[in-house]
Length: 467
Image (tube, rainbow, N blue to C red; front, side, top):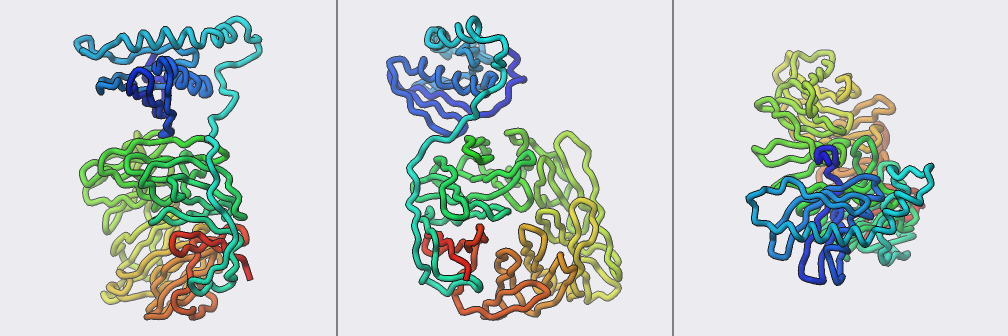
């Protein structure tokens, strides 16, 4: 068997504890084994997964004394050892015994596949996708939100509520059809907009707030845990687990995850169920975001460029606004957008622009500002590219209008409503529209799911009804 032709996912570990107990971990999910021959049962469990995938899988077997070796396990139960060092003192007999016992255990299956299976059956294709286990549902019920003033346009009646793991927040899908949370009993739970549980899965202790992102062009919900990145494609499919190197940080500034491997370790993108290392960046470059299997980078005063594993870099030239001379500096980027500050002939004036990350075209030009004024602006876009606030510059992409809101500091966006502070006052409104002052402490929604605003107080999610 050519090891290189076998994908590295799902990650499989077989850990033998004693003569009767073992643990099989597949894609981060633990399957305890208690059997008179735990090797036999573990091999059977992994071979069943291989049969579902229609191909062999790689696994790592770990003996109770810590000795370990790599294996390849086939759908028919055949087990191959990989790259065993002839000088190694690791025992090979457990592999042989497990192979023989597994072969006996699945003999009936082999007979069916080889002898009795109708010729028209195609065993190279899995007939059933791996599905998540049945788990106890979290407690969901209606309540009243009385802790703080409700956001404008919503009532204090919450059609459904649910407890969150302490220190986490909900994630609302970009289309507003789902809400993902981490529960207090260490599960990820995904609800529809009416509070019905769509699916659940176990997550490791210390799992962070879920994030809706894209991997390989598909929408997924991702969770960063202390040692791994997990992502689910939904519809009950199991997670894909990516083991993270020590000190790795996962960023979601762009459409896809970007894995930063420390100050000297470079960075990787997620592609094909694996981490793909990016080329070494130009000196002085900053990683801005990942989009699929490529990353956008920039030097302080330009240029911008896309890097992709195995390919040459592609320069992105932002269009220059009228009255500008040269790029002062690249500020930041978000999905589809990059922020550029331009110098002008006047030393005390700069022009901030929002450009696209595909062609570099200008999609918004903010009013001129003093360099130190624009330097402190925070960028806050919505998920649908309809509105944004860049500090005091209010942008309505749909109406193609920008305006200046003195002393405005953006905090969050729900739909097209921007929440922010002006001095000590909390205000909210739509760019190019009217803003209103809100009562102190007004709850700011994390998003809108269906006809509900999702707010949080004291580790409880409240799905508020519309007025």
